Amino acid sequence: MFQAAESLVPIVFLVLLGAALLKTRFISEDVRSGLDRFTYWIALPSLFVHELSSTDFGAMAAGQLVLVLALTVIAGCFLAACVAAILGLSRENFGVFVQAGFRGNLAFVGLPLIIFSLSGAQAADGLVAAALVALAALVPLANTLSVIVLVVSRHCLSFRMVPQLAMRLVKNPLIISAALGGLLGLLGWRLPVFIDRPLQLLGQTALALALISLGGVLVQLELRGRLGLAFAASLLKVVAIPAISYGLCLAFALPADQTFVAMVFAACPTASASFILASQLGGDQALAATCVFMSTILSLGALTGVVLLF
Image (cartoon, rainbow, N blue to C red):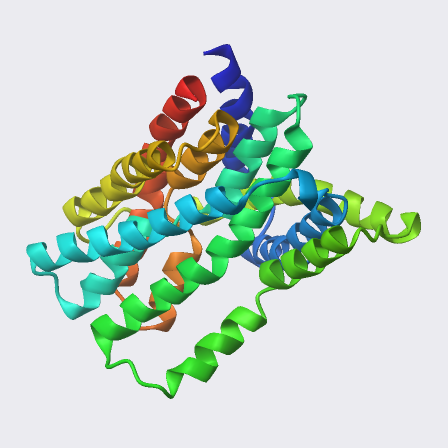
């Protein structure tokens, strides 16, 4: 229990701090939005390049972890789509429900929890690097599936959208930084200190800023719309998806430390970016916002269970 508190309390504190800063107008939404962009485009990519460029990939086996998590995302998307079809959801709600049911907030919740939990642990650096590799692989997969389900539910998917979708992925800073850092690590090239040190310092700001920004987002969301539907999607995200992930971990005989990483990522709440994507692609914005808020609250129990059990 003490270990769970050590891992989760810093996350909850920073999220609440972000909510308080925005609620009291200590910072404005423009400032929060700027912090969000800084985290996404500079701080997190710096963390990726710094960590992966110094990783010995020859001694790290992340292939099965990536496979388990990728299969979890795909299976979760399929399950959420089946549930949405059974419920007979409207075109406006279908894609939003499916996305909320499988797309997790991996970079802003999962990664900080993994790093906090592994602090001081033996072989922590290698496991964090494995988590970064897995995260870099899941970002394009989850983004692609999210766009597809939202577009298909509202429109007809056409080949004309393929270049736009490909461009979204190619321009993603997490994918670019993971590819760059991974390439440097594979080649055994170490960055000069005058480059690596600034990247390290920038990367150290990523986790705190990500959580503060998340708190600022949550305090602006309203619990409205179809609460029962949002609750169902949230249960899929924080209960069904971790169950699928654990089954796959057992099937692939994943080591205990990598099972922990997989379970943390699986139990993450719905990504806050899903609200933005739903808004852009004509989904039910109220449902998307409620799913993000409700799944974040429910994920506290799920993530606590993961830390205690794994």
